[in-house]
Amino acid sequence: MLRRLFALTLLLLAPTLAWAALGEGEFRDRTLGVRLTLLEGWSATTQTGYPSLLLVMAAPTREATISLSAGWLAHGVSIADHVGDSLKGLRAVGLQVISSTRTSIAGRPIWEVVARGRGDVELRQVYLVQGSRVFILSLAGARAVATRYVQDLQQAALLLAIE
Image (tube, rainbow, N blue to C red; front, side, top):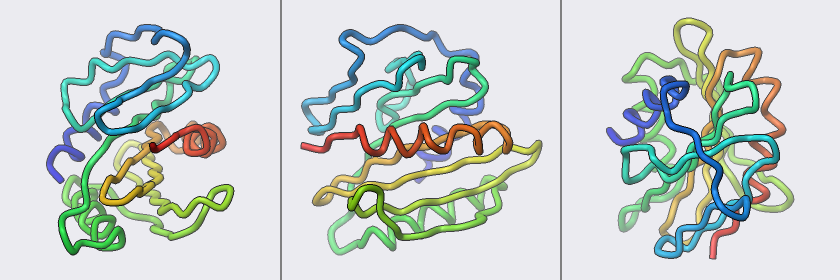
């Protein structure tokens, strides 16, 4: 959980990251069995400094980021419990959880979380599970900006392939 909290801090500091184009417009981690086609016009880096934070993409204007992080469900822990623990972590760093909803995108089951912090910061997350692997796509930016990029977050969830 602490890694996710550090990752949130990293997202808020995104302008300081070194952005680079990834080859073929695709991110792939063969060890975790995950692949993500990068969003058109977004720049990306894998140089995050956190092992569980695999990728950070920045909007063309650099005013919002979408990150991909990975984790594992502990034995006997459901995704609902995992999300619940994550919500506690978000609250612990001063974010107000606005919603946490189990839903689907194109028939794929997901959890959606919306949280807000001081200074008009908004965090939107999509949790996807495959077996015991959990992948989290997180959109961070000012509230109005995050609202503009919700479709990009949903597109990233559709483009995420878990093998």
